[in-house]
Amino acid sequence: DNDCAGVFIADVLGHSIRSALLTGVLRSLILQLQPSARNASFYMKEMNRQFAEILQPLPDPVFATAFYWVADTTSRIATYACAGHPPPYLLTRDRSRVARLPIPTLKGAALGLLSDQEYPGETVRLVDGHTFVFFTDGVFECRNAEGEEFGFTRLEKVLQANIYRKSPEILEAVMQSLAEFCGEIPQEDDICLVAVDVTTKRRED
Image (cartoon, rainbow, N blue to C red; front, side):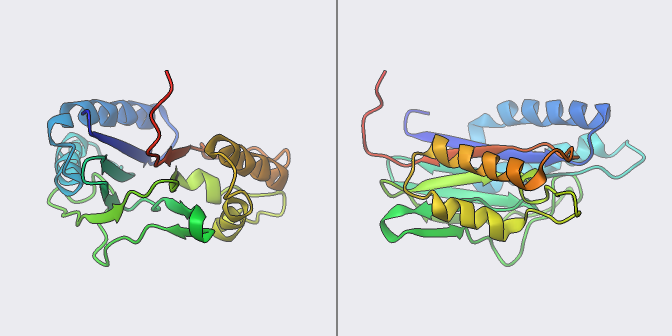
């Protein structure tokens, strides 16, 4: 919408052709449910209900973790809901602070596991200069030659060390750090990073 935009990040279990097809199903549901996309809690609940119905005939359990964040630029508030996915980081540059968004104590299960699952919503203020960094578990679960995970602590240190740089440079710093940590060890999972800047500046065409 003119004053509303959302980010939906998800990770489907596995790396097979079936997983790729289910990713396509999720993409279709994202578009289909767009009329209700302003309400993060309801959007995630309905997404889960329909996804679970599609998965029901499958013999083996399949699920997808997901996080949905939607910003309203009129109210300058973002609402979000979590389905078993790691919450994004909020970079608060005026305080030099890196912290993950809090999620409700009653966490929502991954999509597709429980058709009647509720997804409590949370809110966060949109402040000029703040940046949200979304990611999948392929980032912190990367392993080096010794089998050690990259982990959240290293990820937070990279974000903190680059907090005053532009967002594309921050993401590049994370990718560079991952490459140095893992070396030539092939990674089993895909990596996704998305940064969203909050700004009052008019976009340049």
